[in-house]
Image (tube, rainbow, N blue to C red; front, side, top):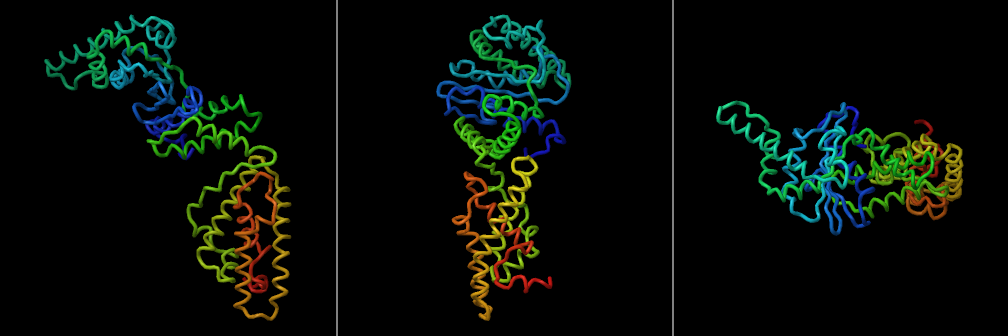
Length: 395
């Protein structure tokens, strides 16, 4: 997740919770691969299918829970939103909360399916009339501030419906109490992965799926189909096969290019007159490769020995080209040395992958090779100019 949720304000936590809950909804409650989820559309989360629309109002909290009653302000604020859809034959409504509903509470009928709800309509009608009545008394008495400011709009919307429409609305509502919070999202994803992924891979794949989802939902108006989520999930699972590796950095960039420049890597490119854009390309590749290698080792996906063996192949292949080039350019003009060195640098970026096997047979990303070469250029294990060692020996 891109935001430090442990230090975020409660209002921000609720906002950040919406897209992650949308992921769980899309995963568990869609009925077709083409169903799609939206955030902050008709409600906090909306799930749309061919013949249904499900609205989810989320009441998120990290604090201790309380008992939900018919007097709850947030519940009535939600009734105001949903009342406009009372006559819709395709809408369903879900009030998702960390609070509890006591078994003795009348609202338990909105938690359990297939229970008569006429008594709930009557109870809510009485409560709405009480709120409106007390507001009117306060207005007549010129009392300030007026009571029930958070609840009154929902009460008015409910009373504006006929008794038949009120029942239609209430029959579409489900309360989901004791809901998980944003700190438990990772566990919810792991629960779903238990059906299809084994062992420690659940934790690693859950991390990457949430990172992907977080990026996809930066735009709150985006619509994501279940098939899109499933495709990404299958891709992630495939990356953890024995002949492949997860790709975490091919689409990432360093915050600052300048911070990645300098040192022997840049000087080596200067020796062959490679100029700024080749330096930038090298810096990005090295940053990606360095971070990817560190993450593989940190997560025990790949061991250091395998990476060392891969680097040995890179050095040997480079030496097969650099050695003969160096021999051919003895006593040749500096301009020609620069030209041939630049060609070798370009070969690393454009053609080396045609001659060197990837670190795993199904690994398709070239940045690991490009960036590893640039890191070795920083360490003077490889170079582009035929006399790079002599020319940089005094630095």
